[in-house]
Length: 146
Image (tube, rainbow, N blue to C red; front, side):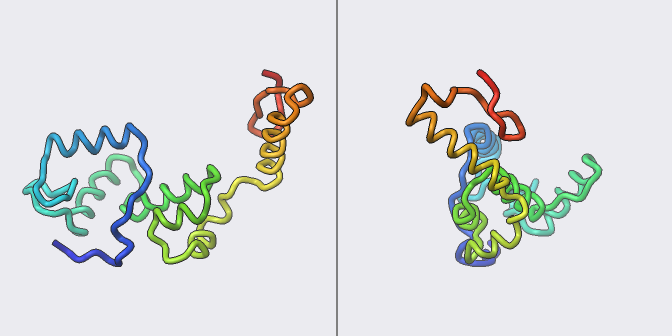
């Protein structure tokens, strides 16, 4: 088996039930004895060259460039743009420091003004629910009646 790039290459990342079910199905259909989940069609560990071949087929199907690294960026960008902490995303991506993550993804952080208004309104609704209505926010962050 190829050596991993760094010690932080082995880490836990969050996954919802859909992802976990898909992984369980992968393991059920193609069980392995070496703690790996994916393999070549010959049941060998998935190397960079084999993965590149798989992604070439995906690129032909979807019509754009896709790679394991682009999927990694998609994962990181999706988390940051939804307000997940830079510290958590850095840990899940295996970055050596949150500063690296912040430099790459800072432009995707939710707008501070909108996030600040929403946080204040949520807190105030809990403190004085009779004054702050229990409405929902629209895409602009403005309250709309429930």
